Image (cartoon, rainbow, N blue to C red; front, side, top):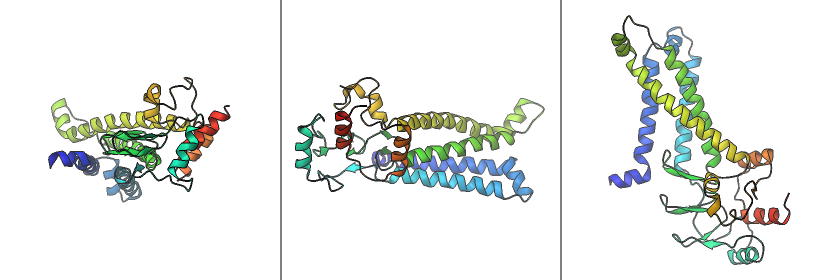
Length: 267
């Protein structure tokens, strides 16, 4: 039972949620800018902060619980024809032949990868994130980036609020007792801020060049990339097009056709 709770991400999600609200409660209970605004009747800043924290928690659960793009059958989506026709078309072109997953035995679309933790192949697989207990793939990657952005805003605002509540004292011992909870919150939030900032920067860069974490880290082992040049990416359409496709186009992409088109018409 305990192993199943870890496997489903229940404990990770519960810990994340509890930590978020405990730190928020500490900020409201101590003599921070939030508390002073409440006492002065200025309720807009505390309300905005609370709503931003709530939004970050809702985004966390949305990204954590939604389908990242699991491959559940051999059916080719989008009305592109049968999988046999698609495989024949691709095998006759310069595109690497479609393969069957050695674990779930389903035909694996290009840019998909089997996740050992989720027990499924995931379309446009980026990585399995233990923080959310779910894969990041075609259907939830954009929401993962939005979540990171909102979470970073919450963390930076939390740092500012926590610093505003540090009270002076005549010696270090009463000072530590007076500010102990705020110092613990500052330490945790500081670490999380650095991690989220690094993650957000990496993902924005990868999105801008239409690459995934898995493709970036394992390029030399991926059949459709290992024969490309070091700087060559068959899915890169330029910065603006990549960002538009990532954030604004909500549909399943036939990456085999994109690969074939770009291979036949190299820039």
